[in-house]
Image (cartoon, rainbow, N blue to C red; front, top):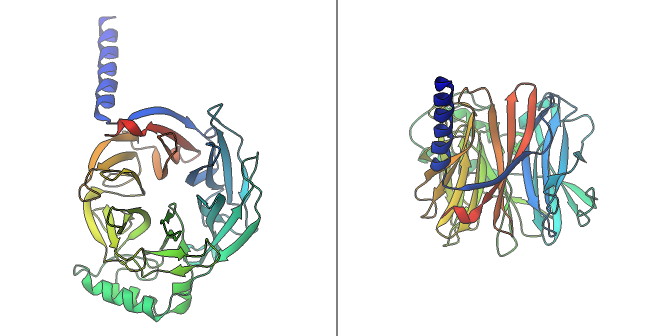
Length: 391
């Protein structure tokens, strides 16, 4: 009995220490739906004008190799504080649909995602839908189109210029160029390769001018770019590429100078570190990618709580996705410090990744991410944090 009480006391101490380490207050956490065998991944979340929330994710037998993958969604009722049943948001017949992103603009709801042609990431096509009627039980889409980009010779020149600015290293990896910088630059000269394969992952940044900056990336080139619209999504153009060796899935934030910073996961060689770039012209051109001293293996999102209060969510591990941690910067991204763990499996069986993070009007931070306990037990978890607790 004495040994049992001692064990229980030790267990309590572990939990108390863990709670003290987290410099934020979790108000609630819940699974959007029970763990299931189907693959669910790549969530996004948005606040509606009513205060209710919509979440989306892709779901099916797999990812790019499974043609039954669809875009699903569910609504969070703020009054009941419960998630409703999942329902279909988009399905390109015969193709996998992946990486959905929600955002609101001019009182309209946008959904952006990719349809994967030929079951290859580098053949993906960007698609999006728009709706004015979304507060009911289901979204009623009123318009749909593809986002077609045609990077030209300026894209090729920018890639070559930026690669010369990177540290001397010629063994990075990408689909088009296994282990050779020169082959990446050569691949950019192919108009088809640079026109297709751009993928979504993170919510866009919408500037005061109304410009939509949609972060996109390529597994073929293994770096990122921005699709931008100055016409409320009616037409799209491309930015200069954000060139690096494995800097993908950018999350965007604007500093007090009006500069745009991109934070990206590391899909290149070890060690896996947080990647970063900056634009001083509203997202049109980007400095060469740099590594920051924060581990980042699988996913990133960033959020501004105030001028000197930014937070960043990432898998801060040497490898794998068994921990998702929150970081804070009090100097607009110059330095990042860990303020605690959102979720962790110390046995490294669970996989927690691809977070989405928004700040609601009521001061609550809403986070969704893939919660995979084992290969056949997957869901999306929703975590609510009190923004006031992050000082």
